[in-house]
Amino acid sequence: MPRKRHTQQRTVIESILLNTKHPLLPSEILEIARDELPSLGIATVFRALKDLLSEEIVRKVSIGTDAVRYEGKRDHHHHFKCVDCDNVFDLHSCPGNMEKLLPPGFELIDHDITLFGRCASCGKEAGKQC
Amino acid sequence: MPRKRHTQQRTVIESILLNTKHPLLPSEILEIARDELPSLGIATVFRALKDLLSEEIVRKVSIGTDAVRYEGKRDHHHHFKCVDCDNVFDLHSCPGNMEKLLPPGFELIDHDITLFGRCASCGKEAGKQC
DNA sequence: GTCGTTGCAAAGATTTTGCATTACC
DNA sequence: GGTAATGCAAAATCTTTGCAACGAC
Image (cartoon, chains in turn purple, yellow, cyan, blue):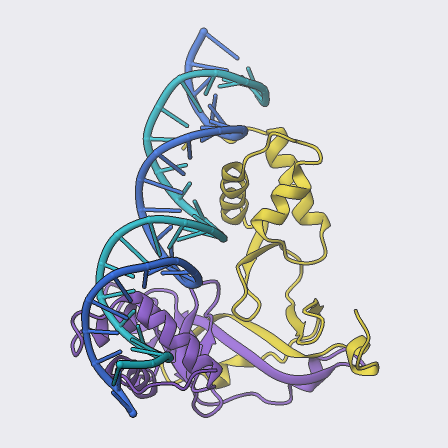
């Protein structure tokens, strides 16, 4: 298979994913990247994501039944989605010991946890916009 | 708002969801329902699902980043997906105490857990089909 | 200069909506 | 008979693909 080339587009898309602290939609990546590359197209974003996935630099995640988002691979973490403002937050603790949920003979490789609720801003002031 | 009518279509779609032991795609619901109602359209399936969701008879679920599926509401449970055979299993225990993962000021409403690994059949015999 | 990559537009795939007709009550 | 629900087709989304032009090396 052909060798990969280093392009501005891939560099910008990769650094957005590695520097953002929450998972992004392809459309959000496009919008952010256009600050630096105004003519960037959405097809290039999808093609870059496909490559970054196969290089295991990024991960696909889905929060509830929302559209699929992408995040740079970082330390193990989970997600919280606010039901009022829809923002997604990383959670850096983990209950662990998921093996106890398994039926006998099942082997655990990985797990996803997503919490839903109200974030601190939305909880504090009922009418406040996040 | 107008009163709901009891139609053949809704009855069939609801009973498929309540009698199936794993989450279904809209297209799978359509295909099964057409055994009884050959002229059923996909739009009717989506409209029925929307109503069943708002009546809290069914639930949307996504397993990893697969397409969204629908399942009849049963007791609180989570899912295990086998990375070899792709089958999805219900898990009837739950670690609970998810509040401890929350940052201060955040309020918990609900949570999803999905485990990934190898089911008993796939673990036992490497080459076996589930 | 070669050939992988890009941006655009068109094509798929999935879900929603508009509207005339059907059928529940 | 009145009117909500249906089935079809068109529209709206989201993602992928084809292709001529571009740009990394």
